[in-house]
Image 1: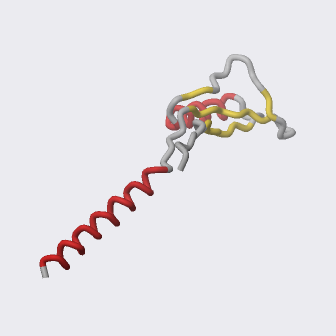
Image 2 (image 1 turned 90 degrees about the horizontal axis):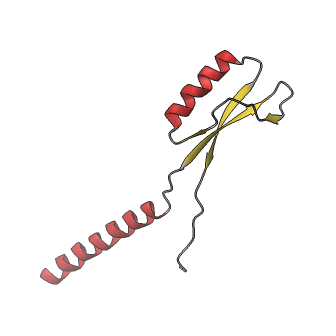
Length: 90
């Protein structure tokens, strides 16, 4: 009876740790956020005097709202830059 309970507890911990390892293995947080500007025709453009690189999405959204009020004839969108992932030979 003790051997069966020991195997059940060991199996439970192995499955739990496996699920935790697999779920956190592929979690990647973006490290840069960028504002992309489009003109009336839908072409991507660069404007002088506008900040486009940010570290947090909340600040970037606030800047997008401000730029949309200031420059109503342009469209602004958010883009993220993901870091490159290198696998360790699995």
